[in-house]
Structure formats: structure tokens, C-alpha cells
Length: 184
Length: 275
Image (cartoon, each protein chain N blue to C red):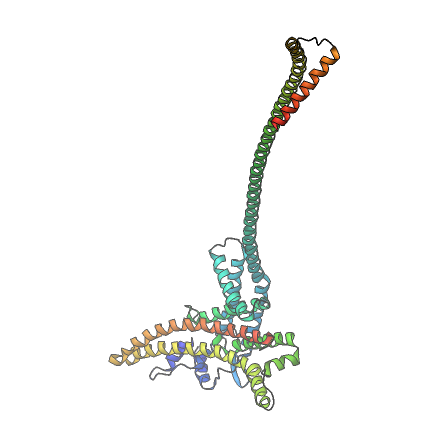
């Protein structure tokens, strides 16, 4: 023990701390080399794997949430589209009904118009026919009445058929001519 | 053991502690010696050697346990391990080397940081209380390794000639200025880096611990040997000892951080496409 102390004290004068101890030089390299190897083989890959897994887990979670969100968005868009379609359909049906109603009304009106026209026409032709009939009967009656009256007034026999008829015709023509010029 | 030795030999007058106090004798008291580079060295297993091995086992053991579960929702141990790993991986390797190539260097930087940090912290852990990296030999080999790693990384990217051109010829400079600058750049980028890297760590650990020994032994000497009114100053020395011990904790962390940070920067500079 005492010898050691003396040696240490003795060395104090000559020891240069900058000069290395050869065993320490080698030992440090060996120990650190083994540590480096062990760390590289067991520790760093384990940490890196954990980091990578954690990152992917977080990213996976985010991706799943994104997918869900996208799905929900798509569904919402689809529903909105369906709603819009239904609205459009309803509007279309309404419009169609309105058009149909208008068409029916128009058709009815047309039919009624035609019917009324037909009735009016019918009435007109009937009236015309009746008028014609009246004119014919009147003409015959007026002729008979006139000749009878004239015969009675003149006192002469106007039995001659041809003559009588000629006289009546001429009278009526004159009457008509007067009437038309009078009207015009 | 040598701490006691110093006080014993300086019974009357105070002998300040020196670098010799860091040359611990082998455990078990064997004191065979051998000569190397004009120095007499102990032949045997010393405390810093055991600490070095212990630190390797502890660093691997802790992170292996922490990484083993691989749970999506980490427990306390796994969270601690992941935070520590993520600190080196993201804030040192990725931010400095860049997100394309950093993964290749993460195991090295990660192992290096916690290896140095734990060995530095050993200086403040009771019963160990010795900074492993106050032994220059331990640091030299780590510095040599980082020198090899960043140079080889650069040569792989640029080729041997391309790499030396990349490191030694500053871009945008032509003509006779190159004669001045090329040796300077070569010296600063290739030669000096491992030396400063090693000395910074080793000297900080040595000096910090030396300062602690000085305050502890000085205080003891004042109280026990001198005594009286002057001896009371020994109390002040011990208060300073405690304060400096806390400062040392910071230095221990910072030195590990700086060592690894510079490693990352050297690698990043070596593999960079352009300056």
C-alpha cells in the first residue's frame, strides 16, 4: 500500500496526462464498438419500428376517418340529388296536369263552339227553308188574292190562265225592282 | 485510494492534487508496470476501465429494455427511452445532417452520446466519482473513430480526390489565394478536428474533477491541519465544492452534447453536395 502511494506521488512529476494508456486506448474502442453494434442491431431498429408503426397507425386512423367522411358526403349528395329529382318530377307532373287541364278546357270550348255553330246553322237553314216555303206559298196566295182582287175590281174575266200568270209575274217583277232600288 | 495518499504524504504542508491523481492503481492492488511512450503505466484492471464496460452495459441494457415492448401507447420506461432516442435522432442527427441521409448515422451518434454522457456522469455518481474520460486514451480512440467516420463518409460521396477538393478548396476562390487557403483548410478540416474533439472532452473532464479534488482536499486541509479563524475558510471551500459539483453536472452533459453535435456537423459537412 505504501509503495503504491509512493509510486503515485513519484509519478506526479513525470506523468503527462496527454499521453494515453495503451490498454485504455484499445479498450475504449472495443467497448464502444460492441455497444455500437448492439445498439445498431437491437435498439435502433426496435425504436424505428415503433415510430413507423405509430405513424402508420395515426395515418391509418386519419385515412379511415377521411373515408368515412367521404362516404357520408357522397350519401348526402345522393340524397340531395334524389330530393331535387323528386321536386323536379313533382313540378313536371304539375305542369303536365295544368297543360292537360288547359287542353281539356280548350277542347270543351271548341266542342261547345262547334255545337253552338251547328245549332245556329241548323236554325238558319230551317228558317231559310221556312222562309222559302212562306215565300212560295205567299207568292201563290198573293197571286191568287191579287188576281181575284183585280178580277173583282176590273170586272173582267181573267180566267185565261196564261194571261193571268203573265200579269202576276210582271207585277211581282216590278214590285221587286222597286224594292231593290228602294233599298239601295 | 490516491486521494488518501495525497493527504497522507502532505501531513504538514498542502500538496495540491495533480494529474497524477488520475492515474489510479489497478483494483486489487497489483502494481506491476510497463513502459510505453516514455511513460510508466500500471498493468491491470483499473476503475475507469470497469466504468467504461459498465457504461456500455448500462446504456445498452436501458435502451434495450425501453425499446423491447414496442407498444403503440408507451409506458413510462418506453417513453423515457423514446424521448432520449428521439432527442439524438431528431434534434441532432436529422436537423444537422438532413432528412435524406441521417438515418445511416443515427446508431453511431445515439450510442456515442449516451456512452459519453453516462461516463461523464460517473464523475458525480457516489462511490464511482471518477470521470472515465479524464483518461486521455479513452477519448483518443473515440476521436479517432469519429475522424474515420466523417472522412470515409465524405469519400464515399465525393470520391477520394473529390472529397479532399471538397474539404480543402473553398468555393469561389481562384488564383494565388488558393496557395494560402488550401493548406489552411486542410489543416483545419482534416488534421485539427480530431485533436480538438479529443482535447475538449478530455481536458474538461480532467480539469473539472481536478477542481473538485482541490476544493475538497483544500477545505479538509484548512479545517484539519490549519484550524482556527483561517481554518474556517475551509467551510467556504466546501460550499464552493458543492456549487462546482452542480456546475460539473452541466459541463458533463454539455461536453457529451458538443462531442456528438460536432460529429454530426463534421459528417454533414463531409457529405454535403456543395458548401
